[in-house]
Image (cartoon, rainbow, N blue to C red; front, side, top):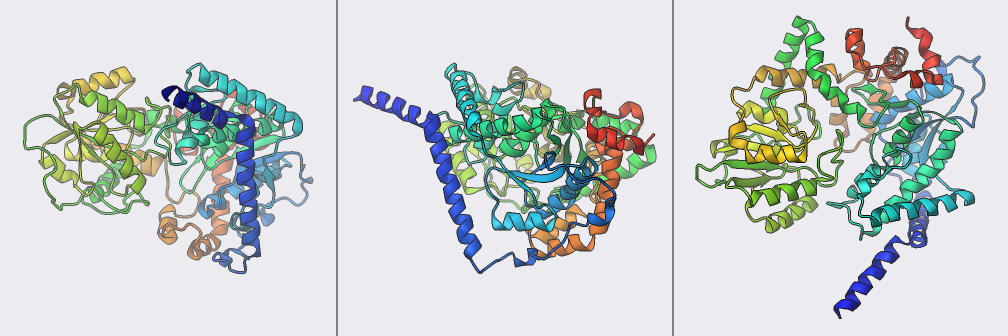
Length: 571
């Protein structure tokens, strides 16, 4: 009977990994999506009718009418991301670059967009959609590449490390699987092979366009996941400019994770800023963080709905002992664990597993607390975790950090959370398991490797941070929130947009606000873009720094059409 189950399991795994079965399942998903779109198009009701008739293009009056016609075989690509506050900036960026380079601004998708998505893109003047489809000859390669990755996995190599021609496609696959609601990636999961197939399909489709030099620039919403992330990673490989812009920043990275290299330089930035500006910034940061630790909602975190800094007391959560008390702060299992760079662990569940096993080796008291706006799925998985590792006690999510401090908790473990600049203000020692936004400062402990992380945790009493220089905490916050980011950088306030959206980015009030400010938005976007490209900057905000402190793009990329086009703008 046992032998039958083993054989049956192997057969099931073989079925899940079968290329034809994966393709058929995805084709069925395409068919279901098509039927849904057809039904949607036949419906008379339209909850988003206010989008129709909105014109946020605002581009025609800025272009030179004498310019040559666009070459329909050349593209400036955007991913399908129908969020108005993103599109108001990036549609203009793509259209301006496409116009200057005689190309076509084009939105790429895996399947035809929904009516809502199409209407939103049309409102911003984006009329061209490129659907990823493989030609017959490419299907042969797709099957071959699929078999290659299966052989790689059969050799017990990790999916997350898989690369094609130096492109980290495995990383994008891994995080995309997690985003489907998986706490970790399983090779027994249908979705793992579906995402592998989609990634290979995207890679092979765009490989032809990149090698034939038909893609002149890419404008993406994210630098991760299959879709935008994989497109960006391919662009890095083929020396094509990549732009990531939003209401508070404009960046042009040239390598994976370079968007977050800036954290290494924060302390240096502070040293290059005038004393008066820095002091003003530090005082502002002190005021803002004081509001946050007094329980005010949404300070620098527009998505926040609850605060963990209330003065309310609930039932005691920790043991009344003098033992070393450690608090683990969880992250969303499913959301981009490698958001700032390759984390030491492949995902958050493996990080927690490491801590769970380590808890068995120590005499510490271990506690774990989810963020207050956790999801039901997260909380369920957390329940499974504490059953597996009973030495770790679950803290009521409503518990205030003030209460935990009073109960004797001294050490806090996070991967890279905002606790790193919040909890030192209350006297906690915060340990980060990976590269993080506070990396340039010593008000946290930063692990450099898993071995180093283990050593840090086993020796916490000796590593406790005393007399933390809070001025450095405020300096970090100012550099992050006021220097590297600027709320009205693009002529429109990110904070106001978040207030107007009320968790629905397509509300009528959002469009009204954008329409009212469209000329200012386009003027500021063009100014920031031209300056960044002309000066060959990775981060636009570095234009305010001395040349010696600016991170420049490399010479290979500077020879691209985009940089040549804007070269004369600045001496």
